[in-house]
Image (spheres, one colour):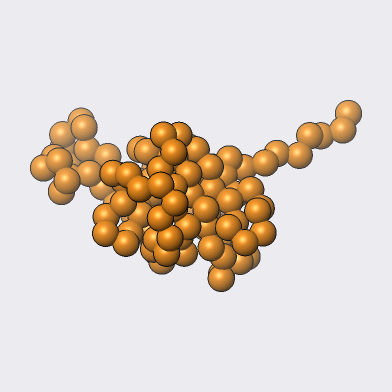
Length: 117
């Protein structure tokens, strides 16, 4: 897959990979300030910031990115990031932690396996 920003592969990409392997997963999503939710996957799509900031495509501030939408099924600590029952994730304000709410499997940050020399 071709990403708009290098970090998207290790953020949005890990969610999409996990979702492909675990289509019924419930996600525990935590932000650095404590805001946290239990969510289910809804969709992913390409987005951009022109509408929310009234930026034209030829403006240097114009940005395209991938976004994942999650449906909030339980609020653990409410905050400003949710929109009604929806939580949109993209590289601009990515959570500090995402794990499988049922198994505890760490999804983000991705876990790396040390290579033996």
